[in-house]
Each structure stands twice: as C-alpha cells, then as structure tokens.
Length: 445
Image (cartoon, rainbow, N blue to C red; front, side, top):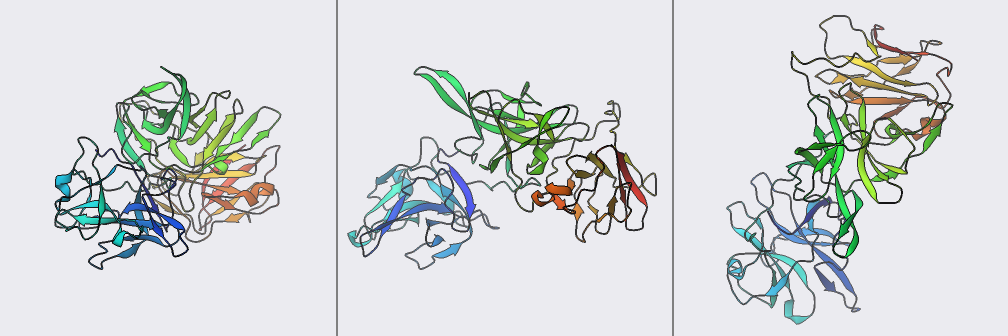
C-alpha cells in the first residue's frame, strides 16, 4: 500500500489537505507563479491510469505533454503529500526508485516527474513511462520505502448516503481516508498532550443494526448509540471529509433535543429500523468525537451533523435480516396495511412529529417503491399532500415530508408540503394512501 495519500475530486477543485504551494508551478510573463498539483485519473474500463497536473485556474490536464496527448479531465485524484522529489540521470525511471503512480492499459508503468523546460522556471508535474529520454532537467517523485511500483486501486463508489466507505479491520485506516480524520481527541504522549485524529466508522452488529462510532490509527474501533461502547473488529471507514453542519435544538415541555434528520445523512439503522445519523460532538471542550445518534438526541454537548449531499437517499444501510431462529425485534408502533398479506414491498409511516410538523415515510421492504401519486393526509382533511411523480424510495430508505414554518428548511431526503401548519399538536393521525385511495399505512400521535 502506497505511503502517499490521494484525494478524489472533480471540476477543477483542489481538495482539502493538498499542499498549499502545490507540487510545481507555472511562471507567467509578469513573474507571478501559479501553483500546480499532481493528479491522476480514476482507473478506466481497461484499468489504465494517466498522470498530469491541476491548475486552480485551468482545471486538470493529464497525458504525455511531449507526445501531444494532453487533455482535460473532470474526475481525478490529487496527491495530498508534498512527496520527495529527487534528480535522476537514469533513462529508466523505475531504476531510479521512482513511485509508479499509474499504468497504461498494456501495463506500462507511469512515473511522476517535474519538468523545467529550457530552464525558464515553468515547472509542472508530468507523466513518463519507464523508458522515456530526458529532454530537459527533471526531478522524479520517489517511492516511499517498500512501496515501489504501487498503483492505485479502483476507487470506492458513493453509496446511498452520497459518501464513500471502505472496509477495514483491526484498527486499520484504509488508503484514501481523509488525512486529518473526522474528529479528534486528546492523547497522552511523550511530549505531553496531543490531539489524535479519529475516523468515522460504521459496523453491523449481531442484531442486524448498523451503528456508528470511531477508530484511531492503531486503536480499537468502537461503535454504539449514544456513546461508543461496543468494540468491533470489522467495520467501514468514511473516506470523504464530508460536510459537517451545526444543528439547532428545540425546547419542548418534556426535553430539549436536536433534530438530526433535518439535514443529516442516515448512515445506519438500529434493529427496529430507526435511523442513525453521523455526528461529531465536543466532549466538554476535549476534542470532537465522531458518533451516532438517532433522530433526536439530548443537548448534552455541542454537536455537528454530517450533511447528506444533494441527490443522496438518506436511508442506508438497512438492518440485516435475522435468521429464522433469531428472535424478531419488537414490533414498531407504525401500522402498515396493504391489499394483500403477501404484498411486497411494505411502506410504513415511521415517525410523526406533531410539533415539528414532520412525517417520515420509510420503505421497510426489499425492493424500491414508486411513491408518485401517493397521498399523505391528517384526520381533518383527505386532500393532503400528493407525492410528485418520480419519487422513488429505495429499499431501506426513507423520506421526510415537512409542513409548517419549518417547511422552508426542507433539504436532501425531504419534501416540502406547505408553510401552513397541518398537524394538531394535541393529537392527530397520519394516513398514507396509494394512488387508488387504498390505505397503506397510518400512525397516531
């Protein structure tokens, strides 16, 4: 596994954690410098990877400049480390101990070099095969110990949360994880206290629930709700830095709580299907710890929630099915109905927040459901809210319908009903009906 770190990005963006001054630069006529960053493409269908550079002004360009193959790409990985660049007088770049940062379709290794044409100070990261001649003075990116010839693996794809996760075990932090972690905690060291980075993880427990927690490099991975307290050996690590946003809390007569579901990405579910949201919390000013919380969490500490990206379905992964001999979890309060006892999938009303004017509809079945034309209404009116065409709910996913003053805050994974209040705070029932007018599910609160 390569010692150098890479971050996936697109559209000419320079990812967080990349060297401020780049890996090279271009000098303009007015003697100003524009930093350039070393990039490589994602593996193509033939497994090939091309190298090049990124300019914050001109996007990412890859391909051999000397062969006039240079072209722009939208998706790419940026080298996060400064790297060790050393001169080499060898024609065989591999013999100089260079880092093979990619391969052509025929398996030919590609190496990063810094080009200084004609000694004019215009230096850019470029790619060279193992046998390229030296046209101008160059430096080559050296391989870290014991990783010579390493090549990138296929990148993880975003799941229904909109983020990428990589499997790991035994306290391992997988290649590609965000360099600075997703939180931190104080750690005693030889030189006194130091901040230790923590990475957000999720793991499936024996009861089928997917719970969230954290792992420190070389430490024991822990998950649980609300406080991480279950040690796990197998887990998934969030690769992306993510967007973390503060959440407001609401005071009621009974308690004060955070409404994580308003903006958060549901990255797991408890055995009863309740969503778990990725959060970081400030433990009395002692550092941010990643952890999991349900749709409501008491305001013990300041917290931020991992925001669901636009277009993501905030409802994965679903609880694992239990074996026949395993005891089934207690039946949830929502009541689901359908035209046939064997009909699948099953859609339920999972939550009804009268004061918050939020209803959560969930797909507890094994196949996606098209909610287009379905109707949600209260006890006072059957007109209600009609789900727009194309509203498809994946298996295990959920969608929230907002009304009242909070409707304007509808975000990813949510639908806006109307700004007027719908639900009676003293008691009401949510009815969900299919396009034929058949009652599918209801919940009384």
